[in-house]
Image 1 (cartoon, rainbow, N blue to C red):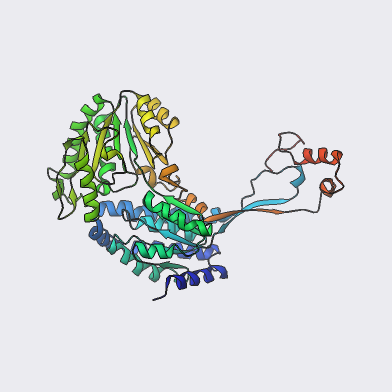
Image 2 (tube, rainbow, N blue to C red; image 1 turned 180 degrees about the horizontal axis):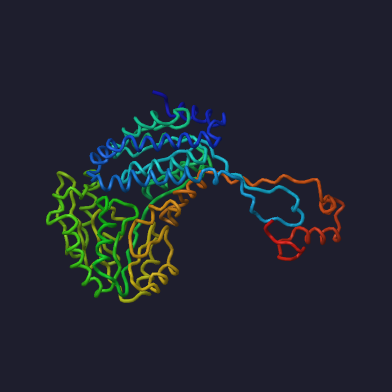
Length: 474
């Protein structure tokens, strides 16, 4: 087996040959990736069920179809994305020049995936990297071993082995991998590991995209259809057993709304998973015993009152959908992202208090507002900051390829999905091919300098509207 450095050197030699640059090559590889997903759906389902006890419905929706949609979108738009951009501002001095922006591939990029969506969190960045013309090394999460091994088996079968490689291993292998120079690092995971990624990237001045997480609030306020809200909240919170970086982490609402919401949540959970969610085929499991113990420790330390769920089984890493009330800002459940099927409800008395609470915390990856009142949704949107925003639903915004997906502040940096991933893995190269015409304007910049020439040159290079009878964009 080739060493990490040998694999990287092979890919870098391929990139320098220019083989990944043409549109046809990129399209061929995207089509091959599409075939990989379409022809191996059952193997993908089996691997994810083994790793996460993930039901077929959730696997198809959140791992397979989201990847296919991003592939369809990229293949449909690739030619347009690759075209030089000419719609840029010019002044009189550059009016006769050819000015444009080229999107060029970065080189050999590293994509480090996460365990909670172990397929799509590797393949969606790969779609973007291929579309942008890069070579890529994929490092799947070692926690989901079945999916990791499946990717290691399938990627070399479907994609060019000279351009794309899968490297498996644990934390020490990842540390070793990060000692190498890459042209971009794309990481999905925790804030703790993200700091290590940044430190490793710094000596090489490697640009980094960090897709992290945080405590994404669900703010329920004003008039609301409580039954519909309960269904959408339960689905988005307990989908993938709450192990989603964009899952609602906690609920903010008034005491009156809380009292109306709790019966609706009980009814909804019974409808979704039956009287015993642990026996439901639609309820997944916590990924490892270590992650299960972490969640149970948080739950035991909480001073909140469990009003729904609370049952657990260590032998199969089961935790029932659990709701707590009387939770304070200082509670153990509010100190870090929960990342499991535990939902604290905090009460506020006004819209302003809820907004103030959100703004006191780190900026979340997602922010959800449930309200029939448009003014409430708009007010929260205008007075908060988050990676993404969704009114009256949860997590579904990340499935639309036309929207950028990414964090802000502590929830990450950079974005992807659709065109935004293509841009992440591209260098926007500003280009100017100058004309030999209008030399009488150019001579104004040559020595010997004079105030007379300076005045004319300032006039010719200004972008002030109508300063020379033109416009700022030519």
